[in-house]
Length: 451
Image (cartoon, rainbow, N blue to C red; front, top):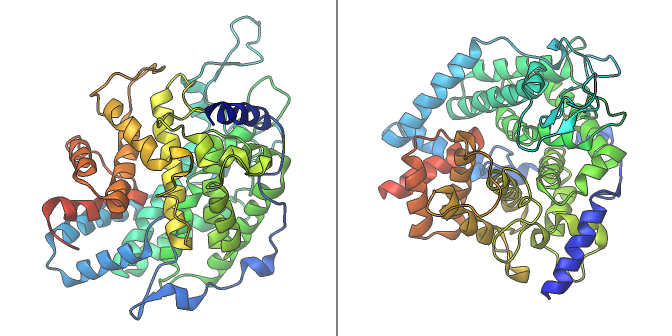
């Protein structure tokens, strides 16, 4: 079996550089994008649930109920932190993709534009072109174009406003969120085109690079923000419809453009986060058939999966010993092991909402748990990482790991993961907004209380 597996993985490497369909191509019509969600699926015990796919809507409701009781010190401290951050966002101006001073090759300010992070001026040519790759080393020149940073910042602001709006029902947070969405996506002067064709531009190369699509992975979390905000009575119908139309066009580009389909065929973290975006956006547009199809396709048996599905298989992305073969050769391979696993965990969290269990996948003796158990002793510094690592784990890396461990506690249980969580908690890591609810839930477990 191991020889057969290695042969197929070798084929995957070839597939990853050939432009094939990631999913059956199809257009998403405006009428499809406007179909309302099933109202029966959006209630629990008479209460409306937010239509979220990464954040668990039932856990969100539990925390809201705990906050409303006002006698839960953990919940109240959580709310205080959220509102402090949300109130600071109220004072900030909206940001836009059109603020950059350097434009992409087509000269259009509305196109998202970012330089390839690891590309540097060529020391062997007079003009430094074409740029050359230095894996794991970010060229500071790439930070001068703000679209990538601003997209992340915009989504973070949207998440904090959405959480504050849902937990307090205060209209000021939803109104501010609408302003941010209008400026970034909808207003004629400041909107972003629904594509990432210039998202990873390499100076000196006469081609577009599909790698830029991963730079918009935050958009999956924007789906959750919108799902929470739509419960606000102050949520604008025009904004709601405008965002569905924008995401409909973007999903169509992801599914049908040659550039995006190439990205979807990659077996490494780029393919993982392509799947994260497609799954979440399809859910927003009430296309759960696409979401389920994509998630279920990751769980097929390697021996009989269609060749076009092989790059996205969990058994291809994770070895039986927990290593990740398409991340292990990177200069910062421990970072990429965590980063890719975090993406797989996001897919598993989405699966929870559409009836697909990625957590307990065990075909070929591999899976998410195997990958996590392999990473933990190295990430905590208990063992020396045996592969390339040109720099140590960042604060963000450890925060992502904490988010993974938090989910492991909920889905697998056991004191060992709780001990790891405590070790990471001692580092005063601030959870990412998409992990804040799980983080709070685990604190209840850690203190022996129930929310």
